[in-house]
Amino acid sequence: MLAADVASYSRLIGLDEEGTVSALTAHRTELFEPAITHHRGRLVKTTGDGLLVEFPSVVDAVRCAVDVQRAMATRNAEVAADRRIEFRMGIHVGDIVVEQNDIFGDGVNIAARLEALAEPGGIAVSARVQEDAEGRLDVAFVDDGQHQLKNIARPVRVYRVQLAGAAQSAAAAGPASASAEPASPAPPTPVTTSEMPSIAVLPFQNLTAEPDQDYFADGVVDDIINGLSRYRSLLFVIARNSTFTYKGRTVDVKQVGRELNVRYLLEGNVRRSGNRLRIGGQLIDATTALQIWSDRFEGDISDIFALQDQVAESVVGALVPQVRQAEMNRARRAPTGSVDSHLAYMQALGFFHTWSRDGVDKALQLAYRAIELDPDYATPYGLALTCFTLRRSLGWSADPEHERAETRRMADRVDAIGRDNFFALGGAGFAVASVLGELERGAAFIDQSLALNPNASVGLVQSGFVRTWLGEPEVAIHQLQRAMRNSPVDALMFSMQTGMAVAHFMAGRDDEAYAWAEKALQRNPLASPAIRIAVASAALLGRPADATKYLSLLRQLDPGLRLSTLGERVVLRLPEHFERLAEGLRKAGLPE
Image 1 (spheres, rainbow, N blue to C red):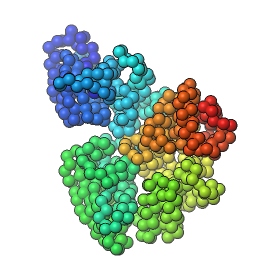
Image 2: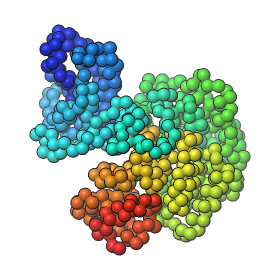
Image 3: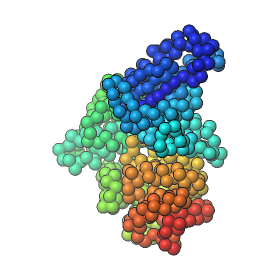
Image 4: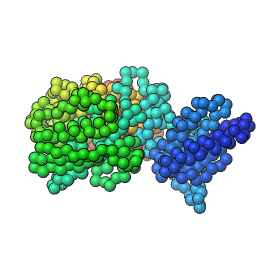
C-alpha cells in the first residue's frame, strides 16, 4: 500500500486556493495516475489532498513513488519555494480487508502513519518494504530507527528512501549511515544502469540430445556474460547468479526486466553434435518485449571462443551503434589455446554450482584437469582457489595444510599469468585472505579484479568480506550494497546478507547485525558465519532465548567450535573486533 498527501496543504490553500487545486489536479492527472498505471497499481481512493494506492509487488510500489517524487522535484524547480506542491509518501506491505472497492486494516493504517513521518518530497517505508526492495532499485535506504505509531501495537522500524540514487547517497550520507562511504580510499566507482544500456543473459536452452550436456550450455552463457563484461564502458551486465535463477522456467520478459532492473535480455540456445557447435541468440527489449536482433552462429568446437565473441560483439553492436571496431578487437582474445582445457573448466563450473560437498570436490578435480591441459589458463586457477575457500569455511578440507600450500602456489601463479582475468584475481584474493590470512595481499588482488570489472557482484562480495576483516566495515557495507543492486535475485544473496551482518556487527550495530543475520538464515539456515553473528549479536542485545536457539544450531553444525578454536574459523585484523565476537559468543554460552 502507498499512502500520499500534500505537505502544508492548508497553507497552500490559504495562499491561493484556486491555483493550488488546479496545480494538484494537473499533477495527479499528468503524473501520478499515469505512473500508477505504468507500475500496475490501483488507485483505491482520493481524500482531498491525499490518495491511497495498492500494488501487486513492493518493488512496483517503491518504483512508482520514486518516479513520482523525482518528477515532482523537476517540476518544482521552476516554482517559487512557497508555492511548491510536495507529496509525502508512506509504503507498507501487510494484510488488508477488502470491502467493495475500498481497503482497510493495519496494513493501510501503517502506510498512512509512515506517510506522516515522511519529509516533504520524501518517502518513508517499513522494514518489510526495505527488505524486499533493497538492492533492486537505484535508491538507498537510511535506517530511521524504531517508531511507535499511533494505534499500532508493536513498534515499526522505519527507513527513509534516498532519491539521489544508492551510489550518490552512499557518498553523501556520512559515516553514521548504513550506506555510508568512509574517508578511506574507496574502491573503483561503479557504472550504473542509468548511465548505459543494461542487459541480462538468461540461461540458454540445451538442444543437444544428451541432457548431461546442460553444463556445456551453461558454460557458453558464462563465457558470453564474461565477454559482454569486457565492454564495461559501454554495457552494464547483470551477474550470472541472478540470471540463472530463471533456469528451467518459462519467463515473461517484461517481468524479468522489472525484477532485474534491466532494459535488455539475451535469450538463446546451444546445440552440440560431435565436434560441431551451433549457438542461436535473440536480443529483446524487456520494456516492450520486441525483438531487436537475432542470429545463429555455427562452427567447429575448436571455434568456440570465436563463436561466443561473435555473439557478444553482435549484442554490443546492436545496443551501442557508435562502438568502434577497434574497441571490439581489443576486447577479443581467446583465454586459452586448448579447447579441451576450457571444456574441463566448463564442466567444473557446472559441478561447483551444485554447492554440494561432492560437487565442489568434482569441480576441484576438473579444475586441476583444466590446469594440466593448459598451465597458462588462469580461469581454472580462480575456480580451484574458490573451492579451497569454500572447503575451509565449511570444514570440508581433508588436508588443510596441503590446501594452504596449494592456495599459495596457485595465487602466485595467478599473479604471474592472470593480471587481465578478473575471475582468477578475485578467487586468488579471497583465498589468500581467508585461507592464508594475508588480508592486505588478498585485498590487493580483489582491487585488481574490480578495476577490470567494477560491477562484478562476486568481486564486490569478496571485497565486502575482506574489507570487514581488515577493519573497514563501512567500506564493506558499501561494496555489499553494490553487489545486491547489481545482482538483485542472486542465488547467493544469503552470502551478501551474511557479509552485511558481519560488517554491522564489527561496526557495533548489533540490531542491524542481528536483522541481517536472520535474513541470511531465512535463505540458508546452515550458513555458519551468519549463525555466529546471530548468536553474538543476540547475546549482546540481551536476548538470551535467541542466543541460545542459534548457539544450539551452531554447535550441531560445528561441534568442534570453542572460543579457543574461534581463530581457526575467523580472520580479523583488529583484536577488538575478535574480542567483540568472542565476548558475544562467550555470553551466549560457547565453552572456552
